Length: 206
Ligand code: MG
Image 1 (tube, rainbow, N blue to C red):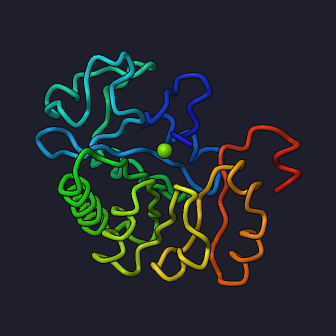
Image 2 (tube, rainbow, N blue to C red; image 1 turned 180 degrees about the vertical axis):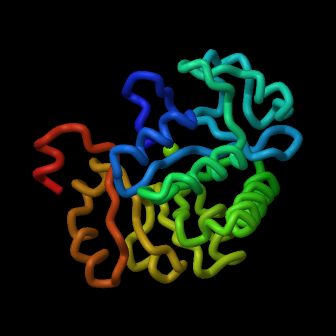
């Protein structure tokens, strides 16, 4: 979740958080992608930069690239992140496409992410997640083989299967409120991922 950032020398969504996730051999390392005002996919969690003074969607990439993360790295582009990710042999790359202000911007981001992943020959290494149902559908329309999971817990596993998702990626409280989804997901072959699990009791429940 934003890489392995809670450790010395790393920061959320930094290149260091990606390589440190690779070092500990977790399943995958997740990161968040926004489209800058001039159409460059950039890596950042929130809609704004860390000190809240720049809105990713409204700022040109030339300016965003000068922003520093907490560990001193510059805010990375998706391209930089994927190139480094390709060297990280132990992990999957989990790309979260953020919901944007318009469908056009979401679709533009989706097209750019898919083509960058294809060009870098990373299609087998990448999985996609999004809170935006539009983005989920656009990913699958452009590449029906893309491994896509949906984050907003407002669709049942059966509905996700019909859309072409490989999985649900829901928050823990939503799954606890809809416990039948565990069985339903298994029955229709939908993978289950749950966030954010930080307590042993939550791990045991799952
Ligand atoms: Mg995320």
